[in-house]
Image (tube, rainbow, N blue to C red):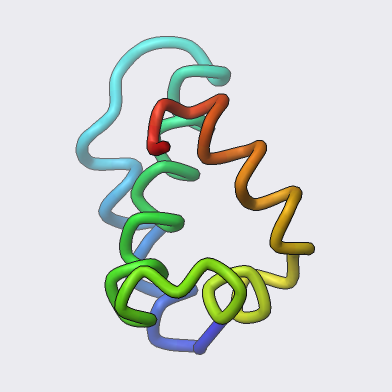
Length: 68
């Protein structure tokens, strides 16, 4: 993850979310994964590398979060 993304994403997530910690965490994960996929033209393997995840784990996480 780039430093700019790491610094911008938390501030955006905190201003847009209300509710419990689980909901806030899922919202943040959705935003971060979506932005990363956009940067990589929806190349899941490249996005997973940037996020420090295995591609299969990113896919499972995206499915759980309703992104797939």
